[in-house]
Image 1 (cartoon, rainbow over the protein chains, first blue to last red):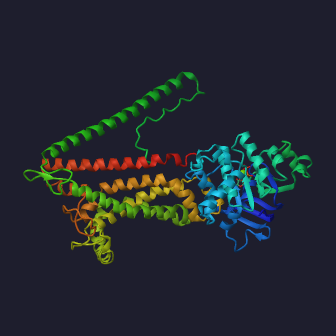
Image 2 (cartoon, rainbow over the protein chains, first blue to last red):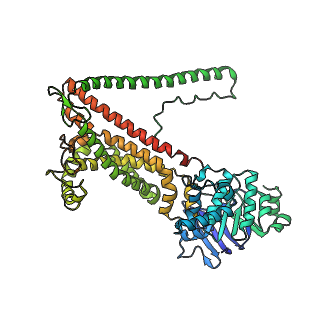
Image 3 (spheres, chains in turn red, purple):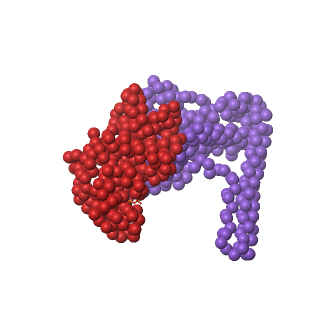
Amino acid sequence: MAKRIDVSGLTAYYGSHRAIDDISMTVEPRSVTAFIGPSGCGKSTFLRTLNRMHEVTPGGRVEGKVLLDDENLYGANVDPVAVRRTVGMVFQRPNPFPTMSIFDNVAAGLRLNGKVRKSELAEVVEKSLKGANLWNEVKDRLNKPGSGLSGGQQQRLCIARAIAVEPDVLLMDEPCSALDPISTLAIEDLIGELKERFTIVIVTHNMQQAARVSDRTAFFNLAAVGQPGKLIEIDETERIFANPSVQATEDYISGRFG
Amino acid sequence: MASTTSIDTPPPPRAPQAEPPSASTSTGRAGDKIFSGLSKGSGILLLVIMASIAGFLAYRAAIAISKDEGNFLTTFDWNPSASPPVFGIAVLLFGTVVSSIIAMVIAVPIAVGIALFISHYAPRRLAAPVAYVVDLLAAVPSIIYGIWGALVLVPYLDGLNSWLDQYFAWTYIFDQTQPGVARNMLTVGILLAIMILPIVTSVSREVFLQVPRMNEEAALALGATRWEVIRLSVLPFGRSGVISASMLGLGRALGETMAVATVLSPNYLISLHLLDPGGGTFAQNIAAKFDEADEFGRDALIASGLVLFVLTLLVNGAARLIIARRKEYSGANA
Ligand SMILES: Nc1ncnc2c1ncn2[C@@H]1O[C@H](COP(=O)(O)OP(=O)(O)OP(=O)(O)O)[C@@H](O)[C@H]1O
Ligand SMILES: [Mg+2]
């Protein structure tokens, strides 16, 4: 299931503004890769090019290649909708479908894929909620709306919704930034479990979090405001935090930035 | 949208704090007092005016109804000048409700479709002009619709009527039992549908445009097609807004006067055969009878107008109930 991501020469634009420039990297399957870097350096933009969400932004445009195992996501015959069914995404702010029940939220992706048999759905919903460590908290109120949960629970609901369709890759854009420390811990634990099955990419502003959850870390930076963001380096997380090969990385991590 | 009728006093503006205390705080307080006095006063004035209008109408209506020899609710005929006076609202109530239902059934789906097209399908260069044209329709005076209806729509619908009668007579409602041109309830309904289309469309469009980006991205990221995004995110979020929009349209349809009066050839019969000529509505009946009526006749018309008013209130109340019941599921918490 989990697949390798191979990015080469990727440049993304908003209209005429080049947000990220010529990024190449490899993301290993069954591992967690963290993206760090100052605000505005294009982490979210880059993440969203990995499931073709960037192009839904007005003016959004991408050049370059993203290989998922051997298939180019930006190939001529590739349907972006199909890409998004295999590359799941969790957003900064929890965004369950507010009018849907907890059950229907988790089942939404399955229904899009044409799975409608109730028994089959129930099975996958339970498995996904367990996978997101949410089952025990919600099993008695699966028919209540998802918007009635706490923020941390909503975020785990969104994770359950994303993993229910068994994606090849799971992208997370600052999934804990709207959460308290306890919910954050719960989700970090969850990420540790999920990487057994999925390829995970996580954007975070929290250095400790990157150090705790990720196997590899990529540092992005931009020369100046208005300049495109670039990948500075990507390496084993331990190396990035202990002994990075670029000075800017060390400055950023140690807080001596700017 | 539906809650703009509340007359609460808005919170008074806060006096700036960092200013020197002497002059500015005192003028600030005076300003507060004047402002809150003004808004309270106009709120009360509005209530007083409304109450006195309602009281006046109810008084005149009571006079009329007390002298009515027929049953006011079930009598078909409208003869307040006969002796004894016999008049009732059965036909008018039926006609008003039926024509409005037809209008809603036709207009709401089309309006939602146009609104979705403008907000989610059309390229920006096309969306703005389409929205503008739809809004323009709302600016056409209703008498123009009436004339257009009588001159263009009625002859055109004659053909549709005989076609419906020929192939769909088995549905009962499209079985034409009385001969005549298309000056019937179906025509009125279609005309009303065209008239309420703009308001329903533009309110729905505004609501659809307000769907939070992250709600739509939730669906997109799951691999939803454009239509699936609309089904998963846009329609659930917009539902209460569409209900409000429909109620605005329904309010207009229920009370529409000139267009109906111009198109319909009224009579005092109730028929569920929508193609049969005739029927009547409250507003149309008032417009048609008011000039020739004596004082008592006018009181009788006022009584019928009061029923229309109550009907509108009931419809609005029902809409609010529907919206309130769905509050728990609203998109507010996310
Ligand atoms: N919708 C948009 N339209 C135009 N420009 C955008 C848009 N979104 C982002 N940008 C620009 O693209 C650049 C990268 O933004 P991006 O959101 O990817 O940064 P980020 O690294 O995720 O920042 P943060 O850490 O604050 O989330 C910024 O210069 C930003 O101004
Ligand atoms: Mg970001």
